[in-house]
Image (cartoon, rainbow, N blue to C red; front, side):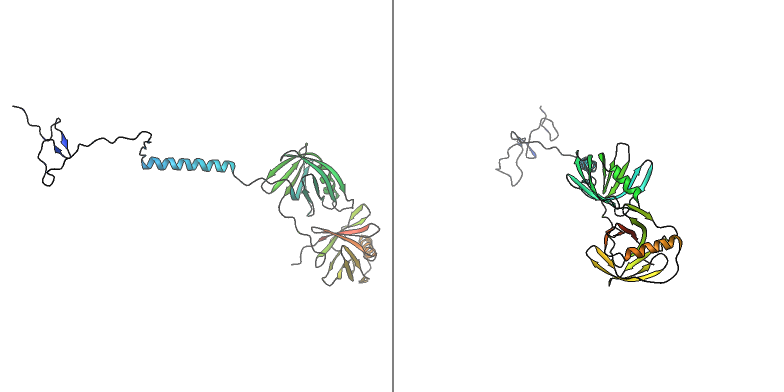
Length: 312
């Protein structure tokens, strides 16, 4: 006697949840139920595999980190183009550092350069060899006597021949073959001090191409201010004085001086006489570079003065 296939028998065949040959459930009588068939994947259709959530998140984070690393490696502030205006900060030469006066500047064009050594202006022809080298051929320059000739001379000596360019954010350094450097910044140079309202402290007396600093006894004493109404007041090094000035373009003319009558001898007296003669000599050519004023007479005599700090 054979065994009836049970619900748990391995040989049993099932259709839609019931064994083959079993009576249909109520409500399904007469309904033909087809056996389940495995879905056939059309040819060419891609198969997508499920990626576990934590594994997918880890993959996304890894790609993001890798992307950030590439951006940082190739990013950063762009290096400056040498062409443009630069304020000279200092020179290093012979193991010494020389700090630049406010008026020391350099402006690079594509084929030319111009600037100021700190007192005298200059031009040059330049030839760039890519962004890392330039060859400088000095051109013309003015020849005024200046109080700080050491910096002037050193700057002129370094800014010629083949120079290596070292660039950094907002900075440019020119280096000579012996390692001397000209350090510059792209920060805006200090604006020129105004002729009027500024208290000018005389630092040196000029005669032609010779400049002599004031003697220690007169240093800091000889000074003057031109008011907005062009009234002049100050000290000649010993006596106080006043005058009226006229200004036409870059020319300043002092009227008759009125001064106190103290007797002044020695170096202080010599400074006073030189300033009295200069102010009374007629039209003076004025030039302001940063905080430095130069007044020059037709005979080549003159003075250089610095803008004194504002009174507290």
